[in-house]
Image 1 (tube, rainbow, N blue to C red):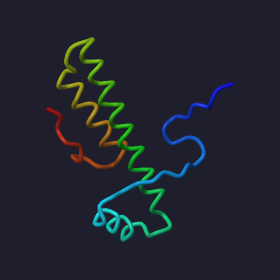
Image 2 (cartoon, rainbow, N blue to C red):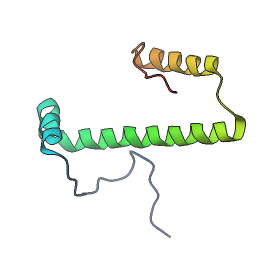
Image 3 (tube, rainbow, N blue to C red):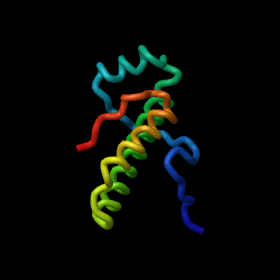
Image 4 (tube, helix red, strand yellow):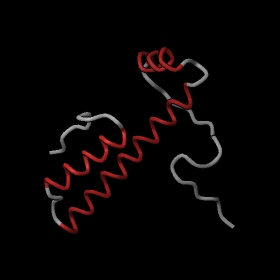
Length: 94
């Protein structure tokens, strides 16, 4: 049996060394406190990874099928806005 494979956000916590600019670290501490620092960083990294995976999926889809139609892009933006309750918060993709 090999090592277990975990998905983004799953598995036991593991210690890693992380270097951040002091201003960034201080901004995080001010917003979430010292006790929630690791949780905040983990959540931010997970969001970034999921965004990267989505970008890769969309690029692959468009390579195989051609560009996504403008009306389909708008429907996707509308769905995100509705799901997250943040109309107009998603940047326009070029």
